[in-house]
Image (tube, rainbow, N blue to C red):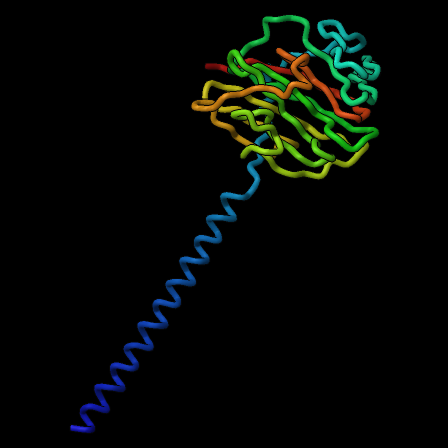
Amino acid sequence: MLLTFSRFFLQGTAGLITLTLAMTLAGLLVTSSSAQDKDSDEKPVKESPVKEGWLPLTKAASLEGWEVTQFGGEGEVKMEDEMLQLAMGDPLTGVTWKAKDFPKTNYEIKLEARRIQGNDFLCGLTFPVGDKHASLIAGGWGGGVVGLSSVDGNDASENSTSSFRDFENNKWYSFRVRVDDENITAWVDDERVFKQEREGHEFSVRAEVMASRPLGFCVFQSKVQVRKFEWRPLKK
């Protein structure tokens, strides 16, 4: 009887060990799979813009179609060498689109910007979102915040679109915004930085850049050059 019990005990122990090992292995596999899924979710989405259909927003040698935004303390603005040149302001310098017929939805805007001097945002692009407006901010709050101002009253440093990126002086960066009926999406160097759903949210701009509406570009305490400033309508 003792022998039978010993054999049963050993078999039971082996089974328990086997079961424990199987559960441990399964747990490791689940953890690994979850980590891979998380890595996949967090991996930046690269998407190059389409090549056709873009229309210039600036002329090669003049500010035709634009006016210097009267922020108070703004620096000099000019078109030179086929680039929009924005001198450092105290604190803002920018331009505003004079026409009032820019689309309110289903469009994309893209540009390239280079900060020559300064350490704050090199891209403050304000644009229509239906009957409201919002701003893509890149390099704000001391030089690194990227996001949408504002979502439900929260600016780019406070809402879910906020992220951080280093922007070096004297280096060109590309920026792109798409506004369609469902989302506001933005890319930096063709890397998607946010995709903000429109339904159920209110959009607005900070008081400092209200003069940039309906379409405008500004920089904060920085000297910046802008080129390839273009837009295109989206097919519905």
